Length: 301
Image (cartoon, rainbow, N blue to C red):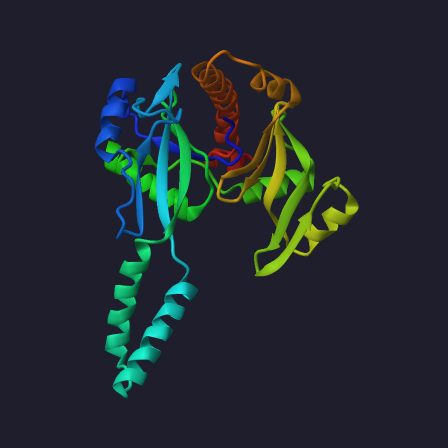
C-alpha cells in the first residue's frame, strides 16, 4: 500500500503507545455496520482486511490504522420526488393545501423509510502512526474526510495532535523559481500552479514545462505566487506540494516500484514489506521538508 496523497500531523511527545495499547485504544470505537434507519456509521477496522484481526499492524515503530466509513446513498432528488408525489396525493384526496410544517414532517418520515432501502458506500481512510518521530501520516487531503478521521483519532487517543512548526510553502517555492536557488535535497519538476494573491481567481497552471523559462518568469512580474509545485526528493519520490503543506500525486522512483511489486508468500508479508518501504522512505523526506519549511527558513530566504 502506497500513500499517494499525504498530510502530516505532529503528535505530542506524550504519545508513547505500543501496538497492544494502540489496539486497546481503538477497540471501543471499532466499526459497526450502519443500522437500517441511520444515514452513516464509522469506526476502526483491521488494516489488513481480515476478520477478527487486530485493529493495528506495524513494524519498526510505525503502526497502520484504518477508519471505515459507511454512508447511505440517498439522493436529494429521490427524496424530493417522493415528497412531491405524497403531497400531491394528499391534496387531491383531502382537497386542501399541505402546510409547510406538514411538508417538513412528511420529509423526515420519507427519509427514515427510504434509508432502510438505500444502497451503502464504504470508504476506508488509512494512516500510520510513527512513534519514533511522533507523526501521524494520513492518506487523504480531503478536508471533510480529514475532519472525520481526526475526530475519531482524538476520541481514541485524546488531545495528542499539535500544530507543525512550518510556514506556508508559497513564499519559499516562489523564491526558488525566481532565483533558481533551492535545497540540494530537492529538484524542481515540470508543473506548478500560480495565483495572483490580489485577485485569487487569476490562476495559471503550467504542465510539462521548464519552470525556469522566460515565459514562466514573466508571470512573476505580474505579481503571481506559486501555490502548488512538483518536486522530487533525492531522485526517489516525486510529489506536488500545496500551500497547506499537503502532498499530492506522490510516486516512487522505478527501482522502489519494482521492490513493491515483488511476490510475497502471504498477505501479511506483502503488507509488512510495503509499510517498511513506505515509512522508511517518507521518514527521510519528511525530515527534509520540515527542516526546509521551518520558520527560520523564511528569514534565510
